[in-house]
Length: 139
Image (cartoon, rainbow, N blue to C red; front, side, top):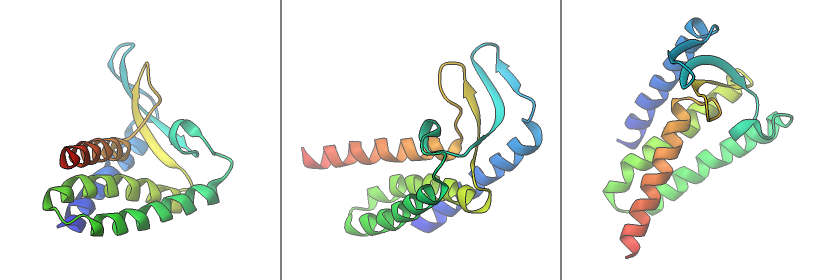
């Protein structure tokens, strides 16, 4: 089930990035001065960090995926499956971009925040829910 959920989310993210490549080369304004869809090639990590070290980003991405599989195997409660699958999908999809394109495609742009993609949303939601569940389990 873990891999099925992750695979579906990776496919959705990769499809959204292909659509961004085709339709959002010219920004599409959704809400003026607030939200637009605009194709961006992010060669770095979060906020463009480490853009001059592509091999390092690929290595860290690979190690992160391996660590997530290991960590997931240590959690024996079934309700951890979905947040781990969501987190894994986000990391995996951005890793795929780095391997095959040399950059991550971002396209969701709020005027007050750096441009991002659905994989980034998956990563943040997965981390938030996992932290919430871990804290809940501890107390």
